[in-house]
Each structure stands twice: as C-alpha cells, then as structure tokens.
Image (cartoon, rainbow, N blue to C red; front, side, top):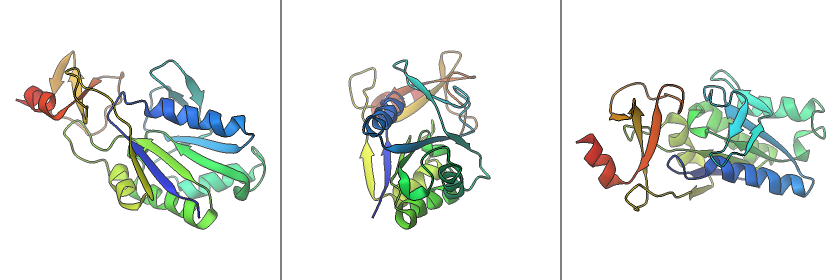
Length: 198
C-alpha cells in the first residue's frame, strides 16, 4: 500500500529543496512523477522556488475548488506522462499547508486507493502559531510525519514563523501572506518568538 507523507518544518528548513531532491532521485531512475502546489502560493507563480536558487515548474496548480485526486488522474491519463495513474511513481506537493482539508483527504485516497505515494511538504502553523487547515489534516491522516529542522538566530531549533512588515515583527493580520510579496518571515525558537511577541 502506498502512503501519504507529511514533511514539515519552519520556514527556511529546506522543504522545497528536499522536494526537488526527491523529484531528481525519482527521475534519475526513469520514474514518472507529478509536482503540484496550491495556487494561493504566488511566489514563483507556477514554479517551486528553493532558497538555494534551484527552481522548477510544477505540473499543475491546485485551486481551493480543485479535486486533487481528479487532477492527478487527469494529468496522468492525458498522456503527458506515461498514460495511467498506475504508472505514476509519486505525487509531490509543495506548500501543502494551503491545501483544504478535503484535498488532504483526496491525497490520502490517491495513496490508499490508487497506490500512488503522496509526499506533502509544508509548515504546520502560521505566524500566530495557529495550525493551517491543510497541515492539521495532514497531521491527522498521514502515514508518516517527518520534521525538517532549521535553526533560530540564537542557535536553538526554530519551530515558529515570525512575520515581519517593514522589518518589524507583527502579530495581527490574515493567516496567509506570501513571503516576499508584502511581508517577510523569520524562523524562530520558542524563546525568541515569545520575546518578540512581548
């Protein structure tokens, strides 16, 4: 049975880089893969952008109304890869926190019913430490959870994503604000996060 994997970490923990490495590993062995990301992530438009400077176009974008399982089937059966969902080695999803709960259910169905491993990469919580709906559902359903680690400016393990506007930390606003568009983020440990929050 194929599995649903959730690989999560604070910002700058190398999630996109890890996803691109997994894609390379599959393709180096002539395996067919699909790469997707939620359309709400406008950074790079239809491209996954790694902070190391590596990037790659996704095969499809997932809108909030999309059925993720149907999109994977449609792409696999359009002849854009070797026809048929059974020939798909895996589906890789970047910024998975932006999936809806229903789309995570569809990713689970793709793994369990269709035999296609799904590897989802994302962050658990927003800048207020509140879980994203997609991440919460991934934590509930995934067969495997793996934390990708990064460090805070103080050297401790970073767990939180502090949001900055004009270089100052802020603690109010919408849950989604894409990095680099209007705001920036800094990965923080619990101590530094609470110190910034006051």
